[in-house]
Amino acid sequence: MKKNSIELKIYKAIFCVLLIAAIAILGIVIYKYGSSQVNEKESQEAVEAFSNIDFSKNDEESENLVQLDYKGYKIIGIVKIPKIKIEYPILEIGDIDPENAKKPMKLSIIKYWGENVNDYGNLSIAGHNNKDGTMFGKTKKLEIGDIVELTDLKGQTIQYSIYDIFVTDPNDVSILLPKDELVREVTLITCTNGNKQRLILKAKEI
Image (cartoon, rainbow, N blue to C red):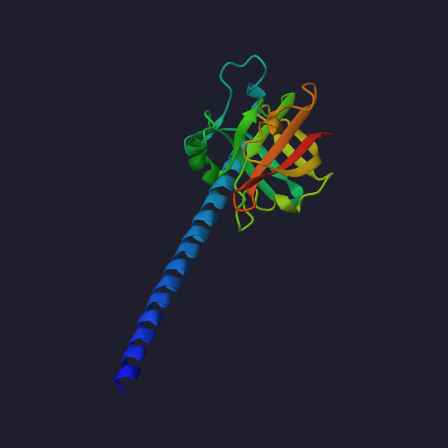
């Protein structure tokens, strides 16, 4: 009888531990989902504000471009991918050190390397592979020929067609190099395989 009583107490203790763990995990999931939804709403508001800018004041000779800030970072353009129904501000973060990129990448898509939006050459932009499909979480659904649209600080929107999709090592810097410096190109970068590799999608102007 005493043995059964001890076993019962052990089972109750294990149950309590599992219940607490389940509640904690549920709390984390709800918090992350809630934070993600708030961020989605705010980023879409930033996209809408960007679309209302009077870009006629921005030209080749402008020293001070009309520009928006988003939570302390400059918005240098908008990326839109119609097939997977995403549209985000592209943030200029300066130093691309991984530690420096953590905060802005939680907010939106960042300029990782390259030229200005819609300049000739290659612009590399990076975004998180979020499990809920936000940011670049759905880029794995894209195929050769799908369209990426970039809008720049002149209000100009250019369409790019995806021509290459592959997975590579995080230290592969060759993805940053333009295929042709006289062609407009954009490279989408996101993590895959448990952050051990990078999913790369390359697109060029149509």
